[in-house]
Amino acid sequence: MSARTYEVRTYGCQMNVHDSERLSGLLEDAGYVGVPDGEQADVVVFNTCAVRENADNKLYGNLGHLAPVKAARPGMQIAVGGCLAQKDRATITRKAPWVDVVFGTHNIGSLPVLLERARVQQEAQVEILESLEVFPSTLPTRRESAYAAWVSVSVGCNNTCTFCIVPALRGKEKDRRPGEILAEIEALVAEGVSEVTLLGQNVNSYGVEFGDRQAFSKLLRSCGSIPGLERVRFTSPHPAEFTDDVIEAMAETPNVMPQLHMPLQSGSDKVLRDMRRSYRQKRFLGIIERVRAAMPDAAITTDIIVGFPGETEEDFQETLHVVREARFSGAFTFQYSKRPGTPAAELDDQVPPEVVKDRYERLVALVNDIAWEENKRLVGTRVELMVAEGEGRKDAETHRLSGRGPDNRLVHFAPPVGVDVRPGDLVTVEITYAAPHHLVADGGVIDVRRTCSGDAWEARNSAPSTTAGVALGMPTLGVPAPLPDAPACG
Image (cartoon, rainbow, N blue to C red; front, top):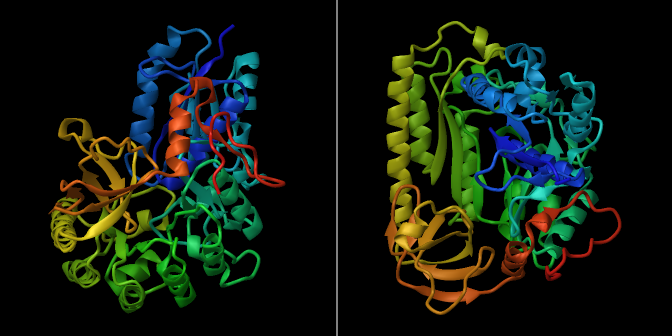
């Protein structure tokens, strides 16, 4: 009997993306195999987000499309997990009774057991835990990339932003011990990974649980002593807890990249107060100034919400002022949308949709103009790129490859003649053209550095499909042996 196939569909933030890697690892550990492209999976898992207004509609629309497919395929199963499942546990099975399993953010490790129980008992299984029992990083993980990896330092959040439902769904912050994090990174490097992104809902408050206010800066410095680890990034910090020791650690640790994602949300002190964001415009701009003083070439990105309840035109102008002063290299911009269960949904003075839309369009235009100006300054400079996989959507038609610079800017470049360049390898190029959201280097590759990450990518893509993927849980003693045909790096 052939193995059952699975597919995980992911919505939402980096936390959800990393959780999906764990869900894939759990299913493969239980004997499932990833579904081949173009085929219908025996098990479809939705890993959901509850932050955006259309999250519910998107989920139920997709579930509706699958209802007739499932009816025609005896034995097919559908599971729904993530933040929306944590929030709407009963609603999902009522609106979509053909769903077999509903599980929450605190018990993703239960998925294989719940699928089997639903199959045997022939009824839906709903299991939502209110608190974390096992730290997710102890679970098997099927990494999507051979050369770059997410590494969780914490889960949950202790903040109470009025627009955000995440703390209610993922719980209070829980921190991993530094030794466990570093052991996981060392294991990843041994498998060929050369870039890690440290991940937390509020990553720079790491250490609050065990009482060390400088734990995050110490962790960054420790990453600097791991041989073979080329690049370290992190997301997302909170301006209220962002301290100078973190800036110093970034500037003084060579493999910590000169890139920072610092969520603004609003430039208005009044709106920040209403959002329950515990910093003000002056503090935010002070952080940007100190980061730029320590790392002049740092690229800083942000998150901004327009149209928060009570936001006036004057408040919005304060946001535009911060954008002009901070000169972000990019921004994730959002039109405020009511989320049931958040305090902001009950606030008076909801801003009319047409006003929100107008402000949003003006904000996006300014962000793009500044990002373009900042990118134009890089024309003629040399940059070392880590070759990426799947990031250049037009690479095939433009005959280019794509990669990320140390500052995380996306660069499309002409491939070198006669040299096989693989994802994970490092190339040096000169920027010849700038657009708002990317750069181009068409002058040829100046240098190629083949890496263990490129070797790992090549080994993964030449291996049989049943062994594809870097299946790592949290390491215990020492570093696990490399996958078959994968070189050990370090």
